[in-house]
Amino acid sequence: MARYLIEEVYELVDAIVSKNAAAVCEEAGDVLFQLLFVIHLFAEAGQFGLPEVVEKNIEKMVRRHPHVFGDVSARTPEKVSENWEKIKRKEKGDAGSPSVLSSIPQSLPALLRASMVSERAAKTGFDWDDIHGVMDKTMEEWAEFSTEVNNTVAGDGSDKTAMEFGDVLFTMVNVARFARIHPETALTRSIQKFEKRFTYMEEKAVESGRDIGSLNLQEMHRLWDEAKGRLG
Image (cartoon, rainbow, N blue to C red; front, side):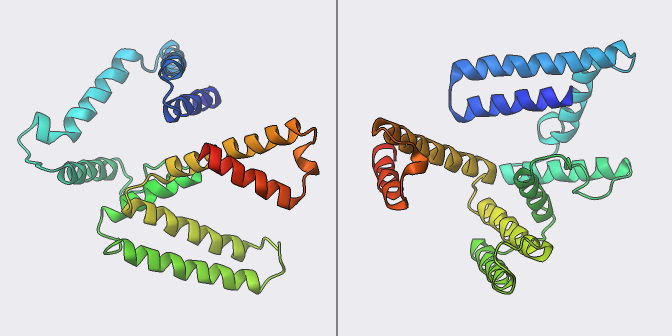
């Protein structure tokens, strides 16, 4: 059932990114159905039902928003976020999980998980001073990756090369954080842009009576530039 829930959530995300209200409505219903089905299964097993789920969520929201439901002062969004993280850390510590990273799901897509890990770590004060510092670090990591590539056989795919490339990606995630860009969303948009342009190339190739695989690289570049001009 976890698999189907994940699939439905991704379909909902696609609908949200495409800003298709009708699709968002439909996919949100599918996600809601999956959630209710999961809750029903646990209720049948005598473990918990919908009332318990709602009650626990309300308790958590009240507990983590003392500036709304209590007498704690939080005049800025940053202070609200800081209080939220402090309360979460205390909760996890009381539950035997003292690390601020322990509640981040291991099964998250790597890019999203990298974003959450870097955000959590930064909120403890372990961070660069500004975006220039992390950009310098990114260039340092890129140089290390380039050196590793040059020292190995092309296409070697060694663990060391992969690790250095991973370091580049992780620092780029932190660049995105400083730039207030969500890396997952940014990459999704770039993928969609590429797909639209490449599909245009395929269609134009078919119109000329050919398959895109039969075009030479110069012809492909010409169609790519044409797609960029027409589609942006």
